Amino acid sequence: MIFIQKGRVIDPKTGTDAVMDLIIDKGKILAVGPGKAPECPARLLPGPTDQIINADGLVVAPGLIDVHVHFRDPGLTYKEDIQTGAQAAAKGGFTTVVCMANTKPPVDNPATLEYVLEEGKKTKIHVLSAAAITLGMKGEELTDMELLKSHGAVGFTDDGLPLKDAVLVKQAMEEAVRLNVPLSFHEEDPSFIENNGINQGDVSHQLDIGGSPALAEDIMVARDCMLALHTGATVDIQHISSRNSVAMVRLAKQLGAPVMAEVTPHHFSLDESAVLKHGSLAKMNPPLRTELDREAILHGLLDGTIDLIATDHAPHSAEEKARPLTEAPSGIIGLETALALAITNLVHPGYLSMVQLMEKMSLNPARLYRLNKGFLAPGSDADLVIFDPNELWTVTDFSSKSSNSPFVGTRLFGMVKYTICDGKIVYENH
Image 1 (tube, rainbow, N blue to C red):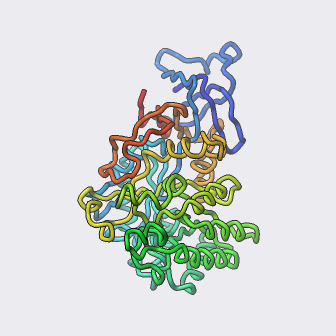
Image 2 (image 1 turned 135 degrees about the horizontal axis):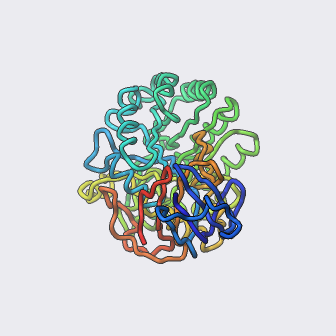
């Protein structure tokens, strides 16, 4: 057994935020409660072979769940593979991740899906996978979603590419309702984009780059919110970046659409000016937008419009990111900095409580993918993260194969001390 003593236990399902003890046995949480040892039955007292973690001053929370990662496996494993991606996840406090389907070949068939899931089983965390919505991610013909679900797909997405055919999207939503699975959408209409990865605005004008306007995102978010309203499909609006898109998700929810929205730590931490400082390390799809957009995202997190914090962990080699700005690939890594960025930029300034943060990083991601996780209760899976919310550290070395992050050298609050998955310590730093 593992005895976690005197920790600040956060359970987003019950709203608990209290100093308590927690006991783990055989991969499950055995007990959670105030640390009054004399009142505990003898079997709940530590024995000579049990492990004791002194969590005094530390937060004990459900293991983080990331619904949006790219592990580049199969096909692009020089950037990342499932093993190194899982190691980066564990270091960041994540016990469950959902891999996107845009591998090479894409996850549009049972063989590729089973490869990802089997490799995931070799890691120390839970590696799940979405499958592609369309064959070859070409946006022309739906995959056999029922077959792919039967082989383990937890959801469907063509992330990385938008779906331009609204009729096809409606068909996908209808099938998703029948199968009771979520769909995740990358919302950028290429018709309006000159150079992707950089917001069309003051910075793109300074750099004489066409850029990607918020309109490209807004128009597709509006379409898919209304399609979700009319079909009843559970839809995840991925990596939301525009203030208008936040407002549309808010309206869709008010109308009764089962829409959820996710935001990345980079979109709530930075604005378009970061491109001037960090170059291609601040290039991503959708791009960092204006400070007004960032403020709208913060408000959307505060009022519950934005349900999820997801990393969109997107590794690239140093050589690729060293290319000229318009030629370098979009995307940054995020698993190892996500929690600290959220603590530093959301919890410490008072935008979110720790309970609200864990709701967006554990409970709501689990709800999206129909997982019985994201909370701490007797009998639940012993997937936990233990961290010091006040410890300052500097972003330097990564467990990921890649290091494409604009946050290198940044001082952040929030250091992961232990990640526990299935009752086993899979990462330790103390």
